Length: 358
Image 1: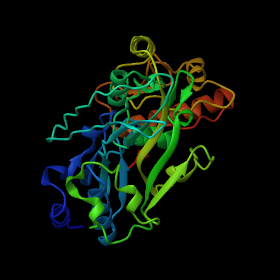
Image 2: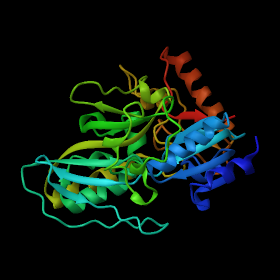
Image 3: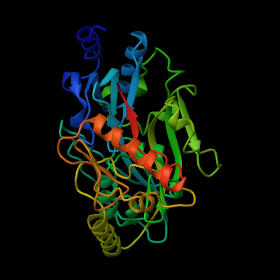
Image 4: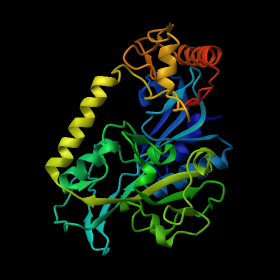
């Protein structure tokens, strides 16, 4: 693969400071491990996303989509093809009567310093929040706090993006994304057409909010949770056929002080119970009839190490990078945990973290 030629092709439509060759993936994952990606592209709007996918398809390259890298483990030999980091960061807040409360993200420079217009929300009204897939959960929680919008506090400490949270149905403290999702818009990679220069995909739009209605139906899929067409694990999101673009959340107006207190309470719980060393959050899924971390602890695996990878002594459900781990160390430790738990308890535990690369 001619990396230089393809990167030059990409920079015809995408700023050069968003396209990287031989990019170390340890810089982009919370585990802080992983080899190089052949080509790494940050996409900031729909036009850039479609163009990057088309270039990859034209050159027969693998496509890997990522958000904040907080649930990702990249193998030591890196990733062949193109890695696309989704940075669609639009936020729109409306009331049920469809009156626009906030059409708000002002992306004025490379640092993407976002400013939000202050408008009043009516009490007792539901609030519709449409959020781009690249918006970080922590950032969105702060925006909603400023607006006095409740229902998202549970996600305020999850270190990921909206796209990743939707794909994985992220949850914490008894709440899940599926509880608040109304609709999700996705781009169909397989049916993507070559005509990507449609006028609704203007480079300077900075948002996909007002362009989705005009796109071809075979490009955009809308999943409606209220009509029970929205599916999660082992569904379209795990088959890598679709790229999540944005999601509509149904939330409510609340009391700012109560929202802040709840966020502080959950933050303290995380600090008390979860490790601070690099990890990808909970390494394993919760079992249907058992708590995985409890089983790992009962098997005497807390503190167990392979190379620089360790089972957290603070929370047995977390495999952490103890400072000098390789991806192989982490994968070997994961396999050791799975085997030990099965031998001692007869339970098969499933991986929550996604492993990619060579």
